[in-house]
Length: 99
Image 1 (spheres, rainbow, N blue to C red):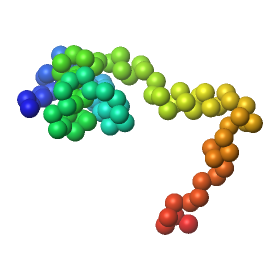
Image 2: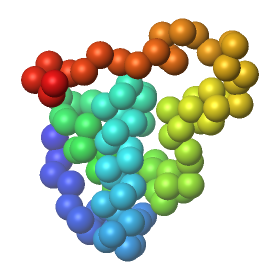
Image 3: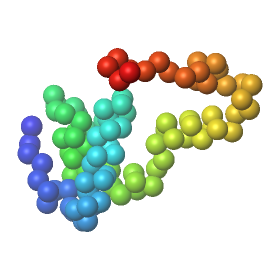
C-alpha cells in the first residue's frame, strides 16, 4: 500500500479546500456502497477516495453531481400525498433517551 501525499492529489484538484470537499464526498459515496475505481487494499473509504483522486479517476466534477437521497426526496415531494406510503407520512417514535 503506497502512501498518498497531498501533492499526488493536488495535481488533479489544485485547490486544497476543494480537495477536502471532493475527498469527503467520494468517501461518503464509497462508505454507502459505491464501487471503488482502484483496488481496495483493506483501507478506509477516505484513503480509497484519496487514491482515486491521486490516480486521476475523481476530480471536482463530483461536486456538481447531486446526491441520490436528495433526488429521491425531490421526486417524493412531487408525489401526490395519496401515493406516499403511510410509513413515510407517520411520525417516527422518539429515539431512546430523548423523551
